[in-house]
Structures are given as C-alpha cells and as structure tokens.
Amino acid sequence: MALDALTVFGLVAVSAMLLFYAFEDESPWCIFGFAIACAAASAYGFLQGAWPFGVVEAIWTVVALKRWQKRRRVQAMADGASLVAPDTVWFSWDTALGRDVLVEQNVVFGPGVTIA
Image 1 (cartoon, rainbow, N blue to C red):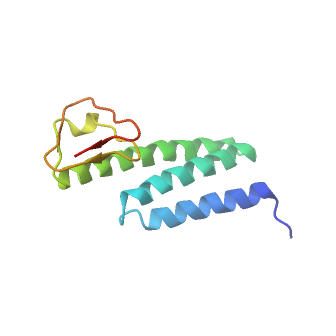
Image 2 (cartoon, one colour):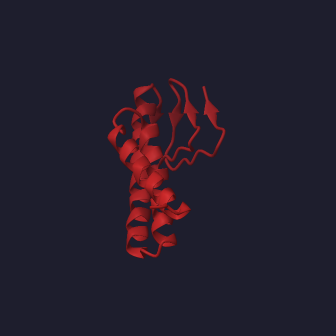
C-alpha cells in the first residue's frame, strides 16, 4: 500500500498534535506547537475534502492560540512583570519581558520586542 503526499502530510499533522498535546504542561511552546499542528491538520482536512474536519481543526487552532497567550501572560507575571489587565495583553512569539516591567492594558507586542 503506497501513501500519497497528502496522506503523509495528514499523518504527520495529526501525530504532531498528539505529541504536542501530551507535553503541553511542560512548556508554553508545546501549546504553540499544538496550535500549529492543528492549523496543519485543518489544511489537510480541507485539502482532502473533509471540510467539517478542517473547520473543527481551525477552531482548535484558535483555542490553542488563546491558551498559549494565557500561559505566556501567566509566565510573564511569574517572572516579575506586572500586567495591569492581563487579558488585554497580546504577545508575539518572541516577546521577552524583564523583571519589574509594567505593561498597561490593551498592549499588542509585535515581533522582536524585548523590554528589560
């Protein structure tokens, strides 16, 4: 039995989802990896014609990204940053905050932001 490229892509995407989900308590990056794997699985679903699967995986992508943001906020506060309204702060994938940094409400950090 030969597997076509689309089937291999789907197998890799769903396997990555399982792997990252199993380790998401270890690091916020595992949650981020889960979100990326969900996006890949969504693309697989649409490409192979199973649009309900694609839609559900797209929703899981959004859920996982929101969980990743929440985990990043909690970690920033645990590391000594003060977030006035944490639910309104959005981090980029590479945002780095130092200790004793005060972040006001409604702040969106773009790529490459480091505040010491």
